[in-house]
Length: 155
Image (cartoon, rainbow, N blue to C red):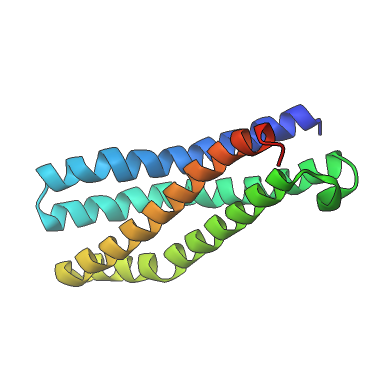
């Protein structure tokens, strides 16, 4: 596969994941809080996460696969790439770990709490997810910026 196609797939996966977090965190959440009562809002988030997290799994896998393939296409792998690529990869793996935690721990609880109608617990769990998604969004936007800034600085 060509380096251009790998880069395109890598960027598209980034757009899906980081763009989705941006939309959910800064647009959907405030609108849902302003217009829906807690039971409807929590049910909405269960549906949103159910769909979005499928796309995130695809994006994470695609990012890892294309990232590894891009490293190999440059010849020599990770030992020959500039420092900013190491930073980008490290942040990406941290984001993937945070996402895995979100999916397997608080999101698993959140789904059970919403089905049970335990709105208080579901609200608290949703807040934990919100904080973690906010962290991942910050890391993702920072990673995008660093990819452009660090090479200019010669790093």
